[in-house]
Length: 286
Figure (cartoon, helix red, strand yellow):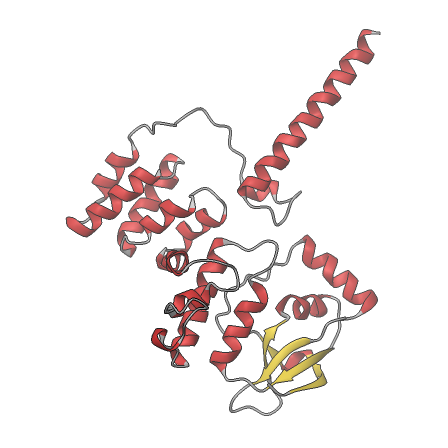
């Protein structure tokens, strides 16, 4: 793969079309912008020439660095220009981001789909690739090779791309677990909209058992708003009193936390505050 290093005007750089990773303007982005303002971009962004353009480029790796540079008021960035077609570039883009510390289920889902589609466009065939033991590998095996996910797990992630954005957001926030979400992905768009209405109306999410029932009913007789409401109104076996705080409020303090990390943060904060109150009470009693 031939490459050329060059300083490129930031105005000539364009985001990779439909790239699956979210570039968020949050505290981490502010910190990156401040770092770039002081130290510059240490690692060049990777780009490819855009077809049918003159001196315009598509970003393969470095979307966050480019956004941070814009925030820092920087007009030019160092770039490594590589000669790749879109499919090859998509594979590089996906693989270069899959090992990030924090990656949302939706990002992984669309990343796997992008890589699988690109490999199919390139003509990858399962009967042309063997593993070290001589067994045949499917393209989905190769898609998940970078992260150790099996072909079945890759397919389950790709199923999530069939969810409507609002329900997929529930998955990213940890309010719907991965396995129930896969089952819900088999519902058609209208059924998902009807389910979303019930979830928002009653501030609840379906259990795995309920999600499996929804899938089966959808495939056999179809789901109606009434049948969804009836199943969602059933008390779950593990249902218990809960205290809820919107993720948006918690992310003020832990911007990139997933649901489990946010829960741990809140519990540790509560424990810290409890100890503070004990110390305060002991001082008052002296």
